[in-house]
Image 1 (cartoon, rainbow, N blue to C red):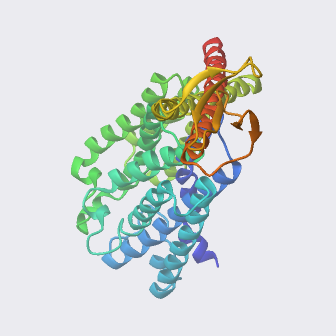
Image 2: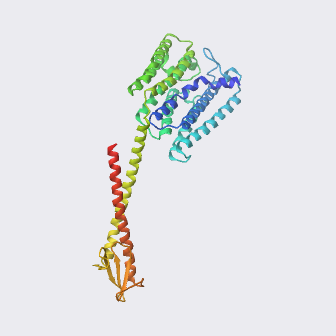
Image 3: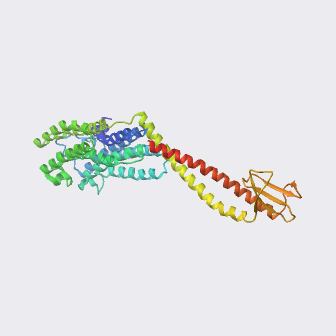
Length: 421
């Protein structure tokens, strides 16, 4: 079992979760956080990192790049303790684990596997799996074309941080973007340190890395800019606690400029300090108090209710505008009169074909039919049907007027609340 564990390269795993921790921590300070989403995001990142490690080992072995293990540890495939077939099985295993973990993460974040956001993250997950496998594996591996630095920056920095934040909050900010850029720079630095160490061997086997293109001096200057750039970005956004890591990084750079061998010993230092930077960055972030959260939630609720009431008011007013011409056209067929029995209500009166007086009260409550001064029931007359139609229209208009008055008061109430807050 030890050869398999060796090939997992456990010491690289803290680096893979630095962006996840940073993005999730920023989400926590914004008041939106789920432990389940955070844990699933970490598990998915770990599976992808292990997948990348296994594919990298197989790809380098097939191309003969890692035959010379001078200055570093020989992993299972190069040491002969794991066969190529066994390595391929492990790769497929972690492809499946990555897909399962990623699917659970997407469902937990969006509540559906078919939501628009879910489909977007399917694409990002597929891109991450392909990126992990094809770094050195395959005929067109991008790690051999000098694009490894870009791949690490994209997956370990931007996508890791921004993805973790979006899964928690379903929003993005410029600060989250720049924090993703910042944490991605030392992640690239880890790869660059690895490439500086292997520069001579990589050139012999045709592996083009950014470090080999820059040369020993240029690669070290590039490495310095990566680390300094990281701290500078964090400082610009007020995350001054991250500057504590300046001391070990200064010692790391001094060692890098004064030594050309035993660089492998500094790999864990850089990886763990990158993880620490992501944690220190969050130290200056203040999570809103419960009262502030309550006020913020109340503000959002009031805003939503205001929008709903405004939409309802607009609908009622449009319905009223639609009904008024209908009422006017029907009223034109009647004559308006006051009735002594109902002093508080007028009537729209029309005469039926047999001399019946058909009355519609202007509050739309009922229809009164009189013949020879006596109250009678409904009659079979087109005028009575018109009266029924008019009664319904008047009743609807009265109801709409009540709703408009009530909704207008609600709109004013929520407007005052929002202005007060």
